[in-house]
Image 1 (cartoon, rainbow, N blue to C red):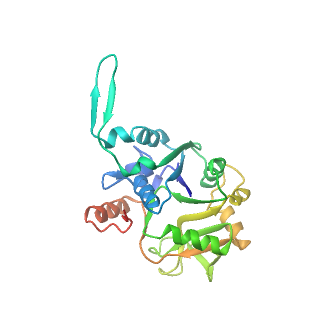
Image 2: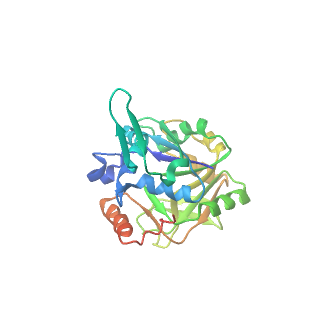
Image 3: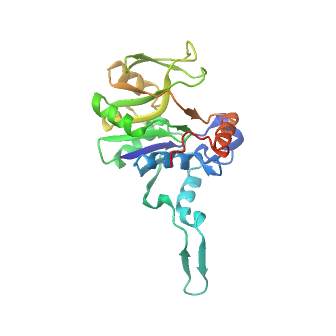
Length: 257
């Protein structure tokens, strides 16, 4: 199943890092957080990626264009008939990565809509380039297939600074800007979607999280796959430090490979 990853935002709340690189390229344990997200999906068997680029997107293009070079031992034969020999293999050799320029100022909904022509099947996966979890992707896909709605989002229980979801069973019926208590569910940003979602996105200026999701929920087309274990976004420098500490200590819950 294809995985669309939104990689184009400016990451203004993490300006210490994003002044110099796009947020998905901020390192966790010496690798971009984007690599961790892609490894997570690939371990579940989903290795066909569409990256929606924007702010400093050329850095993400360079990373993947030079991936073999930067991750391998190399022998170079110089001269008029140069030759490059790579001595190291890696687990990412069967990945497919589409690098899609979706504009510098395009909102998340607009980036998603621009990616849809590259999505081959009706059902696909979507996430952001700045969050990690240990949720079971394939369980969420099976849940999506059972209920038959347009949207499945992974509902998580983080600290109480986020807006919360109003649930009726597993149906998402509304969105609250301010959480009532710290145990409320929020949208964790890991989606299973049908391509009909594009009908709810007007254009580049449309954030996916606002009118499209609100309308879909009002029409009964959003279901929540509830996940009560690890989830962490990377919005601040403190959260970047937390993710790095989890990785270096060997306690990274998202490392399932």
